[in-house]
Length: 384
Image 1 (cartoon, helix red, strand yellow):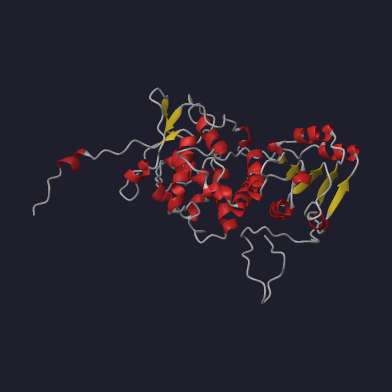
Image 2 (cartoon, helix red, strand yellow):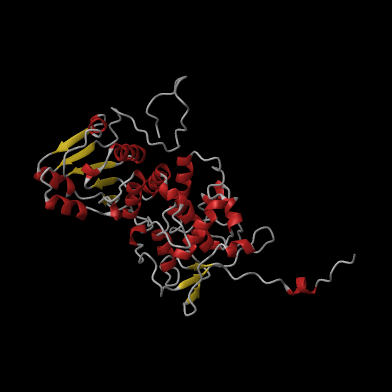
């Protein structure tokens, strides 16, 4: 994203791809839609109802009603992700809240990655008069990064610290209910054919106790990569004794398969971190263990070749349902300006428990531990 100022000897270098909550005041780029402000000081119920009814994820139009209690920069980003259908894990006794969820910029980077990947083109934010300057800065940065139409509904006076920010960008005011309704009722653009219908992933959240569990496939044959004992130790939750456990089908391309569809829907709906979602998807597709995904090259993740079951690397020809997850992980890597750009699925050790929590939330079980072969069991001990 373009920094606010041009680099000079006194301006620190900013990676043009890395996310920072910056934007360009008085931007003259006419291809960026102007900001729309709906001024509704009398708080007409019809405007809020119409704004909520304008929510059309399949057409890239999202309406957000922000959480008003303890609203921070991070919680507004979380509200956007939930509106996209991405849910953060609920803190539990065994699982603390993910570290990134309490970090404002990390939360907005994740939101920006999903926004561009899912094809979001129009954001409608209700109760905007409750947002402070920090929220508006991040929304303006997201607008510029993702080339969004942004509509803010002010049901009260604009805060004094927000007015200069809004005045610094191209915008137009709608101050009559008739003009506001006409804007909110505009038909969305037609749906782009061929996209995976991520908006249809609506499993219950949090998971129900009676949900079916699915067993991940074993990893590809080979000595270099396998599930180790410490990978199994990461999983704290086990299915109840009476749980229904099903194997995944041999081919995991068809997202309509009755065994595969619920598992895929859970991954799309219950994992808000793009890299974690992509990792869980590749665990499901291939059984690849964590160490292998940490070293997966960028080129393998972007491969669009047709499926070839003889290939050993995890992402050779991703199915349509997994491509948005991989693309979001790649987008997040660029937004971070991260040192592991060549291995976009790399996670540090302290994030492993968060991926384990994501597996549990999706009701996915690790593959059965491999048993030593009969040849290995009969191998005589070496003589001293």
